[in-house]
Each structure stands twice: as structure tokens, then as C-alpha cells.
Image (tube, rainbow, N blue to C red):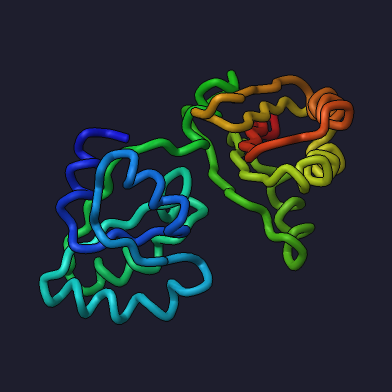
Length: 207
């Protein structure tokens, strides 16, 4: 948390949060009494129009994620786009975003990279992997612990067992860890040591 973020959260009329219980603990810790409103992937479509009208009327809102940065694989894009389309000022306050430290400490080229976020779960997944097999830039993915082994196994199949990869988990938290090696080596590591936490997978591009 930055001093600027604390100041903004105290000054706005309402704080939009993915999970008001999680964010409530954060606000309480910093003695912030601003009202909280739930805003997540299941209700953001329904709320955008009403929020825009309130913003036009002079209300001020802050949008926060449970972790990371809003709109980066989290709610936020729809509201931001609507604000831009309606000439409503949007400010983005800098904060922790997992893929940046994961990319930097991977040791893989980061002058040019592509952020893929979460791969499609079913429909379009195979097609996307086939396309990415030809990608020459470093690729960055998000993955959950219960899908990590499946995803790494697919990366071995589509990218090759010798493709360099760096897997970081729980970035900026107590149990932060990064495992680097070939795709086969890293898959073997997490096969023997069951994955826990949230993961960022950084894959070297095709040479």
C-alpha cells in the first residue's frame, strides 16, 4: 500500500471491491471507514451503467482487487472503458502486479514480451497453444495451483521439453518462491512437490 492509495481510499465516496470481507480487513487495518460495495466478475456487467451515472453526478469511486491490479485478469476493464467513453477521468494508482516481478526475476528476455493471463479453460485452448508455440517473445501466464501440472504438461507437448521456463508463486507474500529450468525439469519439480498458492508462469519464446 502506498501513502497515496491510503489517502484516496479515505477520500472517495465508495470503494468498489471484489470481496468486501477481504477488502474490509485491509481498510480496517489502515483505519479507513469509507463504505464498501461489491464489484466482481459476476455483477460488474450489471453495475457499470449505474456507476457511470453516479460518477457523472459527481460521485467518486475507488476500485480495488483482492490481490494484484484491477483489470489485469481482474474486474476493472469494463468500468474503465465506460468511464473513458463518457469522458470521466480515470486515475490508476501504482501497486503490486504479480507478472512484473515474475518477468523481471525469471532471467528470460523482458525487452519484449506478451501477457496471456489465464489460458482458455476448454474452448479455444488447444488453438491458442498451437499459436503460441510459434511466439518468439517471452510469454507470461497466470495459473491456479490445481491446474498448474496440467498446464505445464501441455507446455511440454506444445513448446517442447527443453523450452526455458520460470514459475513464481505467492509473489510479494511470505512464501514467495521461483523455480527455473527447462519445461521438463520444472514439471518434474511440481510433480514431486504439489503446487500451492497462485502462480505466474514465464516461458521463453521460440528461437
